[in-house]
Image: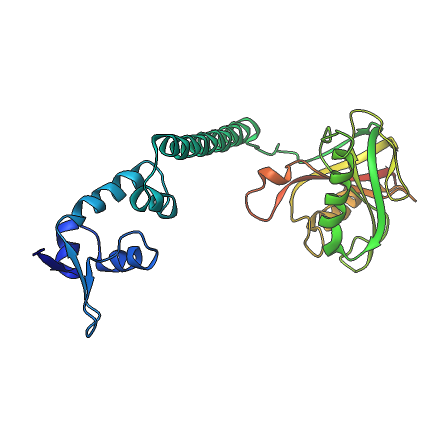
Amino acid sequence: MLSLLKIGEFAKWSRVSVKTLRFYDDIGLLKPAAVDEHTGYRYYTEAQLLTVKRIAAFKEQGFTLEQIVPFLQQSLSPEDVKSKLSDKQAELRRTIREAQRQLDDIDARMARVERTEFVPPADSVIVRTVEPRLAATIRDVVPRTRLCLLLDEAASYVRSFGEEGSGPLTVIWHGRSDGTDPVDLEVAMPLAHTIPGSDRVRIGYLPEVKTAAVFLHRCDPYGSVCTAIGDSASWLASNGFVPAPGEPIRETYLTPDRDMYGPTRWAELLVPVVRA
């Protein structure tokens, strides 16, 4: 007659919790040797300790509980065993490749952080010429909250032609930039090569700005208003400049989306100016 162990005692000997043993029973991985029909108590044999050890060994090799079931309950031919092991081997190799890709991405991110760790210059405002730049642009009158969608739309469009963008994104504020919605804005994705345009996307050169006051600042792209706009007005008044009539303000995001940590990024506010 077999010596039966209550589930608590079996859990102690097997070093597997009672909860786990019940779960193994539910999924058909390890059924009790007997169940008391009156009390529902589960009983196990000492021989089933071997099954627990086999389950642990398969788990150490990365098999899921569902994948282990056939190894315990089916009579498998050597060919079947080899096939299942080969499948797991291929799965683990895919996992390793993906983990290596993720590790490489993190290494690259760390390198970018070290390479682009930015210390703003003492004078964060300069006056310079802005060269013309080939870009794909989308212009629309939308709530400011749709800025992200417009940027994604432009990025997706250029990627569809094999372009990844060749520089920082720029937003051109054609209308009011005081936080009032909606706003007339244009998003620009720099290009290395000309690609076809569409009814929605214009391909061309952002015009040259002969004289621009460039304000380096931390920017929340989706905030209600850019604080640098107010700062720029004060600086212009103090330095003998006024905004050039009819020329829109531009804001260029120096920090790529993927390298943002927190809600803000480094940006340049480019204000076309003339002498007062």
